[in-house]
Amino acid sequence: MSDAPGTVTDQRSEGPLAGLRLLELGGQGPVPFATMMLADLGAQVVRVDPPGEPDRRERAEVNAIDRGRTTVTLDLKSEADRLLVHRLLADADVLLDPFRPGVLERLGLDPVELTERYPRLVVARMTGWGQDGPLAAAAGHDLNYIAVSGVLDTIGLPDAGPVVPPMYLADFAGGGMVLAFGVLAALHERVSSGRGQVVDSSMLEGSGLLTVVIQSMLARGAWNLTRGTNYLDGGAHFYRVYRTADDKFMSVAAIEAKFYRTFLHTLGLDPEDGPGQFDESGWAGWAGRIAPVFAGRTRQEWTSVFESVDACVHPVLDIAESAEHPQVRARGAVVEVEGVAQPAPVPRFSRTPAGIPRAPRRRGEDTDRVRSALAEASPWEALSRP
Image (cartoon, rainbow, N blue to C red; front, side):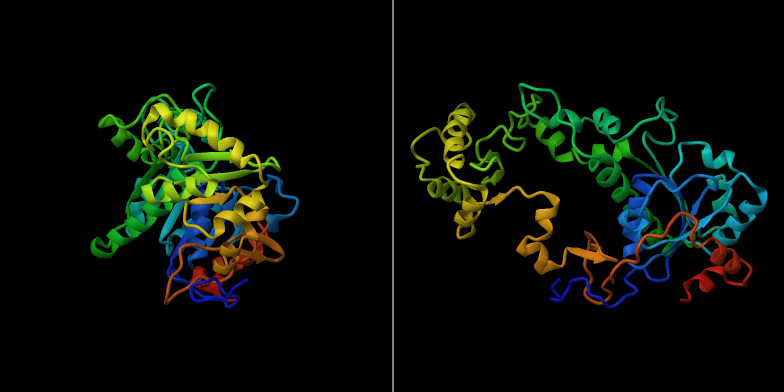
């Protein structure tokens, strides 16, 4: 991996969030992702998992989303173990709650009461639907949240139903990232007020936020609700993917006029030999002419062709191929942690860069160490020692 300025290096750096103390209650999806992002940048994290649940990971170190934590097993239904949680909360900056509405309250950890007892504490709550409303208590997963937020209906082609994407959009983009953003916003406000607060973040609203540009285009008549018919959703010949001779794909996003002209010229086509770029009546015809051209060469051949021109045309790579791409390697965007390749911490900081993340720990692996630290005057300081 490259050690160019701004890349992740092998030297452990505290990062810009050094000194921040997070108590994470074990869960799935968005909260672990948000916690990973914060831990990557230097936050000290203790994750509390319930006892009696087997670790479903045969190899904990391959579950990169759990990197950077100290893990402890505590029973939140036990008064004795809740007292240990309070010992950690007394000097924590953030409590991350992955449960459905009302669960934390039933466990005797009411967020309002916690912020009264620990005035500087930020309680970050992550749910699918939000803390209130008719669906607040309902179960759901990423696909359900993007279905109701309107995101899912925008993905796909006009002659087929919506295309199911991986769980990136609600769990991680609209969930974990928005939650991490909310945590940092609350901590920033605490600088002036001296007080924490409760952050209510939902995957429904977070994923809905991702549609802001499309909603604006819809309001001014620049977006068609029929999926796959707009110039930014695959409807246009200059913004879509094309199959190559080896059954792989090239991505084309030649939106601006200069890139569009270069794109067509590189394919041996004349932009003037057909309807204008944004004439929707000509999109299907242009696509019908472009597709067989791409089908005549392999993905690597087309990659080589377009490497020498600026036309917004690039190969569609799988995750393993992406890790070997020259730009990814030059940036050090993929790192290895105990032999497991994974995305490097982002973003990059000039003065306080992040180091290589610590490998994930198994559920409760640090329980004895945490319990020993809780017997000391400053548990967090004790846990920060090597």
